[in-house]
Image 1 (cartoon, rainbow, N blue to C red):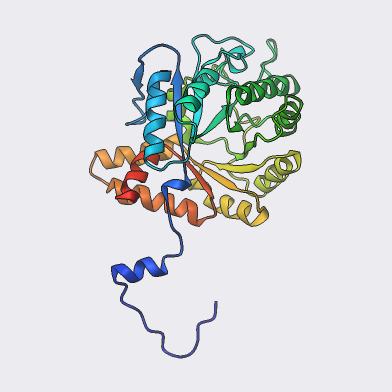
Image 2 (cartoon, rainbow, N blue to C red; image 1 turned 90 degrees about the horizontal axis):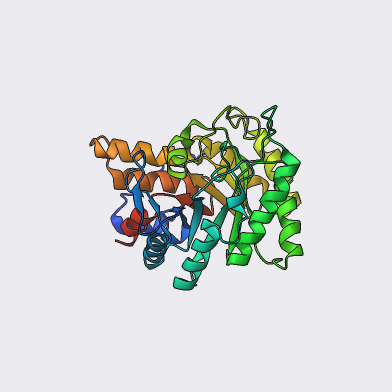
Length: 326
């Protein structure tokens, strides 16, 4: 950038002027709030590694959804913790599964609130992987998994989900889900695809919250190498071609460069997931008096939006919405 030769003057930025010249504006309307819904009645289990986050039975999840709506947050993202698990993750696509029941309850209580549902098998499989695993080799079976993921998405739409969000990273899952939704009469149900999902160290607290840690191996065979940025554009492009309506980068803060590249490559709505580890670090530092929590959270979320996100999925959503409104 070339600056003009004449002397530049700095303007003293009074509070009013700062507002007028602010380039990026953060709002509660930018947020989606993740909720962990568990089987049982009147359950509110704190997640030790994520202060302020709980595993919630349906009645408490409904109350939290109502609170989010009152704060101006437009949507919630549901993750399910089933009562039992098996090798095929059957709880994921059970019409009476935990996410399906929670979706119905929330849509009945707060019909204006968007309900986004996580489409994956890891919370429901006894082995903790995102797809069906070959018993002898331990290999994740991509094509078999696609059938179950598509059934899961259709069952969520049947329950009233406004958006389905496949997070599994199986090859071809957006196309499979789109075809199944269309076949079942849910042509207008959008897909928010985890298009660039990295094999990140920042997911640890989530796996505590969702009880979804792999029982063997890891997920590097189907999640992305943190060293790769160009690959993110390839993965995003494939999801767009397959019919994604919204694409996502996950995690957010270590991948702001990727977020910007994806923003420049597509005009589709772009989401970023401010993940559990990012949340936990700020919370821990704030509890130790090392950071001003409000300023740190709003600065981080503003950075995510400035990099190009239209939607920010964040556990900070209720606090951030309250601070912004205040």
